[in-house]
Image (cartoon, rainbow, N blue to C red; front, side, top):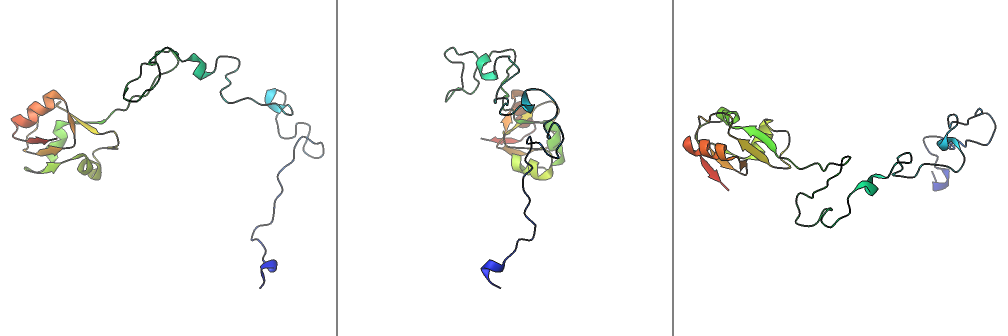
Length: 158
């Protein structure tokens, strides 16, 4: 077999050419009437039906944008909210399933399926009581959680 004798597995298919008369009906696959059915017409990205574009709504005073080192920019607008990055939250009673003296970190929680994601960190809250002596590492703690861990005889490594 030669290179000039190779044939593709699937037959070639031409793109549908619409809007030129023929057997495609009166609307030629573009629906009926309206801006998007006209030749050469279309809606530009960011167009909101005559309303202001989203980026035109933002305040443009000094300090209103994301800057390096500014972890929480103050966007104040009724239509726009910045999604803040929040850690996964775990209560202290979850750690009662571990054995005394175990070392606990976010990776172990992820492997056991106790946390969905550790991408943004894991925060331990002191909602319940801790009954085991555990060593914690790699978490963020609330003040009450720290107090209860130390009271139970556990250790916190930073």
